[in-house]
Image (cartoon, rainbow, N blue to C red; front, side, top):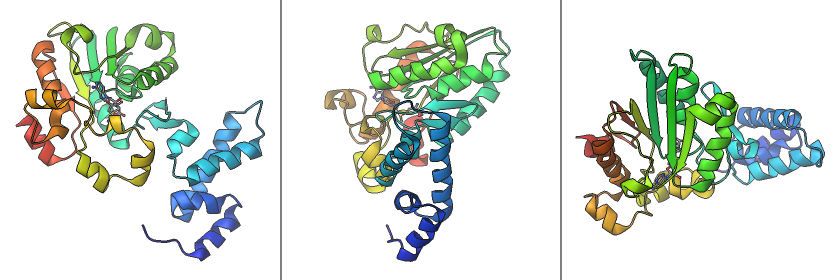
Length: 282
Ligand SMILES: C[S@@+](CC[C@H](N)C(=O)[O-])C[C@H]1O[C@@H](n2cnc3c(N)ncnc32)[C@H](O)[C@@H]1O
């Protein structure tokens, strides 16, 4: 990473005495000014009864200067029509995930039925099923969205995120289950065969090597490895699923195995790149 010239810190200081610290994370003046404004807006819109605003500002800027992603500093990330809560330990939703989720909603909108069921495996914050539910609830009188994740923190956060859909979304239409997709059938939610209209998943798919080589430092240092690298799966499971040569594909092998039982009408899986897509789907 190239060093920043001292003159840039001086120019940042002219924006605000806090800006030089933010510049360490943002690396340029326009992003620094923008993030400073977002952090100040956040403090104004979420008043604290215990900590004065100037102390909160200094604290949040210190966290950001240490490289903590902005979404963990502010606690949210816009996603489609929703504001998804974010917390350390749960992956931050990405713009490409937002973009295909909205496209999937458009496709499903044209389904000529009155009821619809969607299942999202490895759901994290719940962003995918929650946005599908928000986009489609006016169209389908009977709509069920399910999210499954192994991490207790992810399931708790997804349930918190469901509350912004109101009592209907939180209580009836959207359900989050805590389970590993590698559990035997009895440990997984009992989705009846042929009843799922769309199954989605953005599973951990980065190889150990690619994680060390090519992920951004803020991702490596602050986002959960469990969400990104599938290296916690026992070797015997990797072998049984035929993924010894490419262990990073093991979640897809298991998801496709589950699909043979659940028989979803459509499947949409996020992959790292064309090479992985070729191995997984062809
Ligand atoms: C790449 S993140 C995707 C999160 C979310 N769907 C999104 O797109 O922002 C992968 C998720 O898979 C979950 N996960 C990891 N191992 C799992 C397992 N064995 N079974 C179910 N979920 C798992 C992680 O906790 C993480 O939330």
